[in-house]
Each structure stands twice: as structure tokens, then as C-alpha cells.
Image 1 (cartoon, helix red, strand yellow):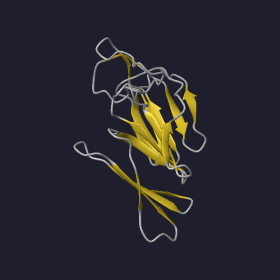
Image 2: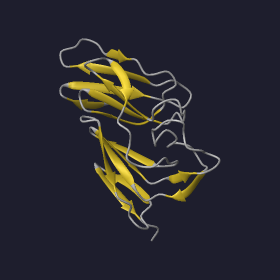
Image 3: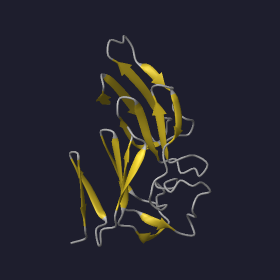
Image 4: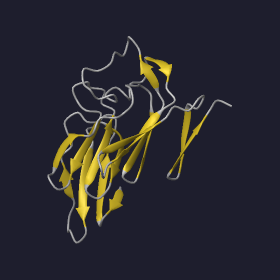
Length: 171
């Protein structure tokens, strides 16, 4: 459950079930269901009070990897494309209205690039990656924009401590 602007949103997802999402607004007497796109599997999600964002782990090239639901229109749309190359096995975190994505590996012949322009469409594949990536990006749900994070030599491990992202090397 995340809250912002007097609104709460709740998302529940299990591997064997379709995810569910619901919105509660101040002074409401009940929760309002948010229809989740068929087949969506939110890997990480964020809520800014007006937009619910899923970083999708569904691994389907025909669907966007980042989906954005607008409270004003009650519809889902693809988020802005990320400024990083396609990857598998990336780490991702949500903090407020932002989603951070770091690392992973390049796609190999066993996990070819997707047929979409979305570089994250295969981000949650369990294996099949090539070269280790030491870059990432941060998505802002409020503005539908990304900030690219430059490569950091030898820094490929990640941890989240509160709202802070810690990136470290093997040592």
C-alpha cells in the first residue's frame, strides 16, 4: 500500500494469480478497483497520488515493460521509453513516485531483443544474459520521464536501504 495526495493504492500479486489493484480516496466509503491489463505481472510499482506505474515482469515483447495508469482518465498507457539498452536480470526498486533500475546483463542469442522499441521489455528474464551492465535509470511517475545513470566501473551489486540505493562492487 502506498499513499499520496490523500489517496491510497494497494497492489497484490502472486506468481500463480493475476494481480489486483485498488484505489481509496479520502472520504470514500469503499475501495475502487483499478483494472489491471490482462497478463500484467508487476515486478515493481509506484504511486504518486495520480499515477500508478508497473515495471512489468511478464516478458511479453508485444506489451510495454513500464505501464502507467492515470487516475484522471482511468486508463493504462505505455510509459516513456527508457534511455538504456535492453537487459535481463536487472535490479529494481520503488521509492515514492520513482522506480530505479540498475544493472543486469545484455540480451544474448537465447533472449533476443524484443520487437518493440521498449528496452525493458525483457528485463525480468531469469537467465540468458550476456555482458554485465553497470548502468541504470530512474523513472519519475509524476512527469513520465527517465534520468539515465552513467556506467559505474566494477559496480554491479545493488541494495536498497530505506529510500537510498546502494551500488557496490565485488570487494
